Image (cartoon, rainbow, N blue to C red; front, top):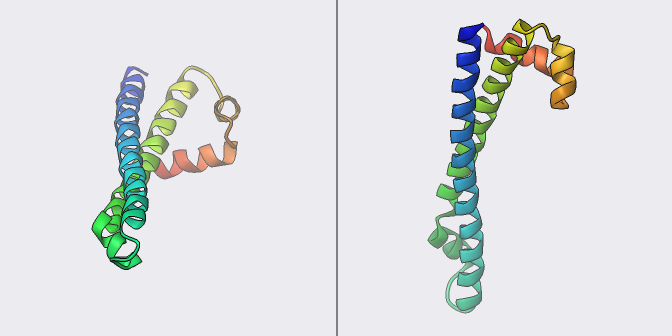
Length: 117
């Protein structure tokens, strides 16, 4: 049980790190949207929409956001599986964990099985 608790703590720290990375990626994406609007308003006659999007480097921002979302989903799933392991060691059922988290028992069972492969 001690190792399961340590794993839960480690996975929770990792989740917090990925949340911060996701927040930063979202803010960067938001700033890109705002900048695109500014560039569009300031340069109505000068450049095309494609040129303005390239100027803001939207492709890079989208890739960063997609990577951050994927990392967050993986980290959240791993933290959830670690939480299930600790709760089960404490005598809880996966149904109780699912109800507490507001998720389906089937989802938690499937994620637990996939993560433990």
